[in-house]
Image 1 (cartoon, rainbow, N blue to C red):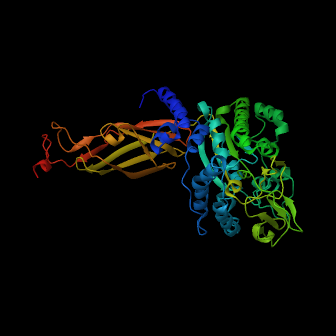
Image 2 (cartoon, rainbow, N blue to C red):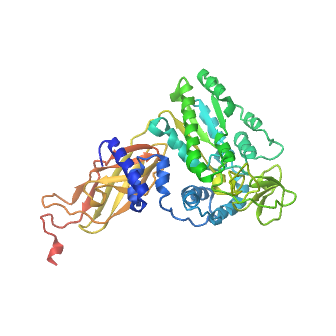
Image 3 (cartoon, helix red, strand yellow):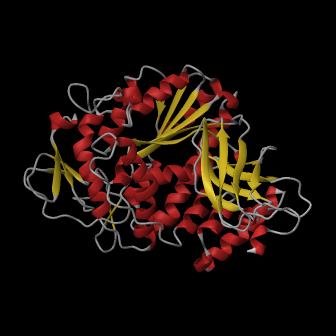
Length: 505
């Protein structure tokens, strides 16, 4: 492990090129070792070289937290691979999520807004932050979970911004159409009568603080930032969602136009931060109203009689088995809504040359429903991470090493890689699968295949350990810490004179 981080960055860049050309060389350890020095886009590309594990369908009795974890950590990475790389998407896994949402969404509406897993709890977070500092609230229309991760990578590139609160998942308000989901995000209410109207500005006005700026008002936003005229500046941008409405080639959209647009949004956010006279005080909150279905949809014809189609949903109620129905009273809606159960769509702004649909949304698939919220700042003071190791075992046998990591920071530690000079398994570094939550002290054990032998001149059975842990703060900012000075293991070696009693058996 080079002491100079820039050397490791050059090594990682070369490894990335090699792995892209020869994906058979990729394994979990190698990927983890270089991932800390790659961009989010590069990590995604390497991750897509080999299929991620195929998850089991979501259990119907899963808790909301378990459902969000299943979607973000299992379903979405696999869905991206099967849609973008393998190009053989299946609706089976998504349908288990659809069933879960139909059963659990009514109870999610009962939870207090500020503690809710529904997306309108984001506004409560923003209001609280405004009591401490000015806030630039960027609401990116159509930004799904995976896109949010990629946007963060552009924002934190070269340490331009730092993550204060890592991305947290939320369920979009149903239905996942802007006029409903975004209104509810601002108003902190379900889109039900008598409050809901098809007017986003009226929803924002219920917040009672700050000012909302659309893409056509960016000059006004910049001017107000310079003047420090607001405590809350809400930039509501639709350029990402419009991208899906205009493109006619799915692969080009996803692999070229989508990252290009995300990078452009990141540059605009950086510019906004620069306009504020005291940029260190400004918090940046990233949020969305809904995500986008991945891949292309097949057109559904004919539309059942009595329905008014709107993409992957329609106003009205049907008993057509291709649809599920959200009743207005049960789901907090202004009218009954029928939603396409699978990946098909009733219509779209954009079609491919084969008449397949791109960019349609409004359904219940995880990529449409699961969105995120994150908080960034110009700079965040990180507290020292502590790590210690201990264990005991017999020479040349396997043993268990206990690793204790104390993370006093507000973001999780990811991409852990541990180096220990005295243990062969760790001498060149070993990837640790754990993710250390914010403000927690975690202890876990890993197997050491070959417990060391003490040298003949060693005094006692205690062997001190030296090394370091490298990691990332919330998959973005690189960090490292040396082992605690008291880190040591016990070697149950009867003789340290060079002879082992086992040799006399």
